[in-house]
Image (cartoon, rainbow, N blue to C red; front, side):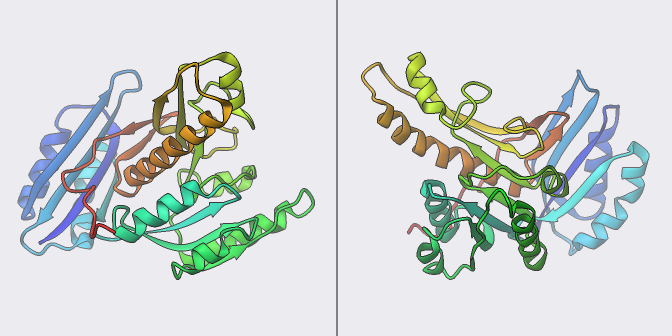
Length: 294
């Protein structure tokens, strides 16, 4: 039995859940997990359904057959195979904690993705990436060659068929054109609990303000710097006794965790854009399981 997923967004109205359930049951499918949200402020409805095709219906057959239901409710509907690994490109500069964490999670199967390339503007992690048998591309970025560098990056995206770019502490601002072309398909990790303490050195700002919580924010990248829809956030407690260096060290751990969780939510189809915000449904049972332990 093949496990599929259906994602739906549309205007809120009566009968949506009944129509989806009836369609799946009528096509020999058994729902194993379901989540829905009705946003009373925007009037939008969001639903994610995991199900097993128990009578051999293919993804194409289900997508085609669902047309009348989608048309009736003017839905945006997407079916996908939950076992298919999304093609992902990682981009990194000189801070490697997120890259190394993602490579480990990928290696043990905790992140069921296909890392098709790593792009960096430095050579620091070339050997690390090569040791994982992943193509490494060093594309230097300067003020004068930014357009050419981004064109080279986008060639790699198209040639590999990458569906998602992950900025694993990639310390370059992407152009508006690249953000628009990859809208909803670039995830960034920001070393701050947004929207507070934006900019280049948020931990120093937090230290100077004497905060008792520091955190990290993972969000979709838009043309507005660090203003994209937030996917995941988390915090770590600190005390007056911590130094600025402690802030950075503790921050690295929460950054890596938050970024991994955001990617996990995206690749499993749990994230829905809702204007400038997101709807993020809980993980389905078993989706965090790893293929192996080390």
